[in-house]
Length: 270
Image 1 (cartoon, helix red, strand yellow):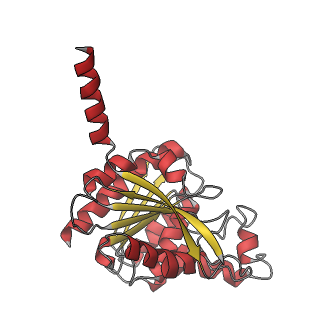
Image 2 (cartoon, rainbow, N blue to C red):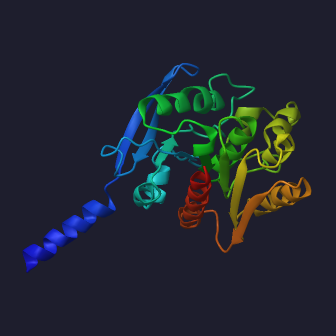
Image 3 (cartoon, one colour):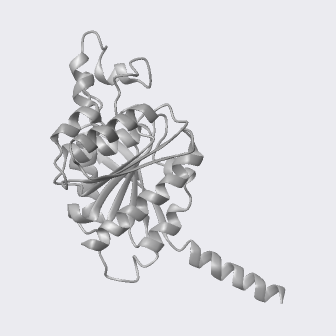
């Protein structure tokens, strides 16, 4: 009986965690360095000749490529359940996923858009079009996902932000921002140019489908509310969620479940 129970447990464990987690090094010609990236493929990846939608997940400030897998281990199961590929790139320490106007060594928009996505589409069986490509992230990564999707509407069909820093202007002394943008006294326009709440003016309804999520105890709550209000004034459809929670792993590890379900439903329409 013990042997049978052990076999059943092993069988269920294999079934639950049949997805594969790879860690790749992707060379960035623009920054002349190798950048690590986690790629989760579903259990059917090697069994079938299918192509799969892709969700890019961006980590927060001081995090790295492994943050999402550690914070939300259910991602492996969700890759199986939703039949998609999940990609978690390293965004550097405080990069904000920008091509910095003051530091040429930080070109993370170029990396994501022109180097990483072509690498993934070349080396994995992806559905390589915007109708099957989404991006989301937490905190700094929430800013990055919104920023990159709005500026590259031909690349992403769907984007999300979890506890995102969608307006950096109220935080001039935090998170390496002056190193990436310059001081607010001399370089104020840089701060205006990269704040999601400003560049949302370049988005038309339906160009990118959005989901925005923030906790009621989060220090980014006010800037997320302001973005939500502006999107409504602009008549841009979006899902907006506020619920109890703070700026921590517990919140974003549960929020990602909503985002992946949102993306899955959108992928299925196509």
